[in-house]
Length: 501
Ligand code: AHR
Image 1 (cartoon, protein in one colour):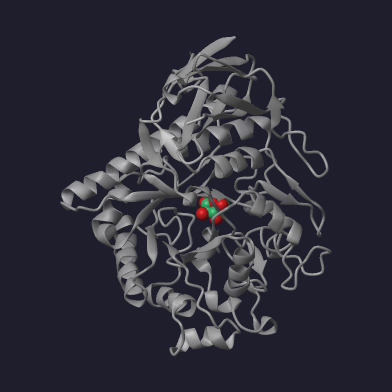
Image 2: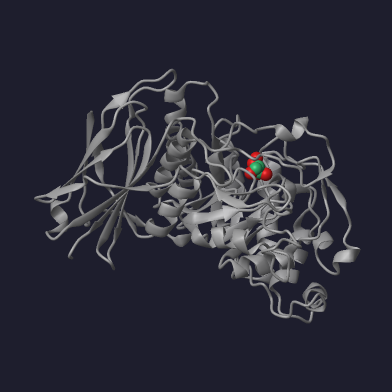
């Protein structure tokens, strides 16, 4: 059995974790909206047609914000189609996912759903087929009180109080050739800056995100970041990053090491931001919004192979294995360990589409995937102060990586409750790992609880069979300020240590 150590001290603080690090995302894609959150006639549907059981599963995750309406969908979307009387709303082709959009759910319905799920709505404006004016029209509709054309239109649609949407994304993945209205960095940088300035004139309180790179392998990364920020640095609050981890080489060692690419992606993006800051002699430090992240590879490009123009076809319904959950856990840990610069993140997505929460087709039961649990642990116990811990772990080499630590970990200190939460993944497929944490700096009177999720590499959950879930482990031992716990092979773990202050 390998042994890994972590030394930590509550005085060595990296950053406070904002709640916005545990955001998520719902796109008009597949069965995310229709037959996902929205299912009029379903036995659990509320007066607006939203499923209560799905909402309860979302609420369990305590998602603070939900990005909407896309994604690639946003780059061809006319928001006006989704407001006003439902019977008058047009059916449109959605080129991004080759599906038909009924527009029966639009911004007012979705805002109501977010409110009922205790989440903020984070809106993406269409900078693919549209521009500055339409973004301003949408902002006017959402945030201005009344007495202007679009704010009065909202009131006429039965929504008296403005939505007061704070977070706005300036387009989606504009660096990607697959994106409707794809742009060069020069074109997008100028458009993002102009849109940001115009939107701020209408509502100076909003927080704006410029679209960064769609993944670290884009040939334009990181020059995209530098060029876009040359134009928009002083006009935006965040730069976004997207990344989906996958098993592209078929080598399990490579797959389990994928979060190392996320770590480098963030470091390189931060370098690009700081280069522009230095060049502009700016006092402002750019923060990152990792507003799409997850594991996704089995159902990639699926939209190319379906019968086109269906309503809510079952797209991107990735089934997450134990190995996927471990990789997911390492990605979450990586985000936590960059909490000094990554201030927002959205798990993509939330329901049915590459999602922790699933519903069976045609209004069947709701169930939870393996990735639900690491996210739940992070969201519920990760909102504290990330510590600069020193971890030492045995390492392995895979086809394309060298020196991959078997242990990936993040340590979050809760000053108020004097609780320490250690999130840890054991990447070893075969061996348990003895994890020894030096907690001498936390004083005496320590108690610990160990939760772990583990199982066969290819195990998955399904309706009525949710075997992949955390179990309480016995055997975590505390002695003289040292905690020792055994992490099962290929496992997600959370160690909760209570101190007496
Ligand atoms: O989340 C699925 C898709 O992935 C989004 O629509 C797009 O932004 C990304 O490529």
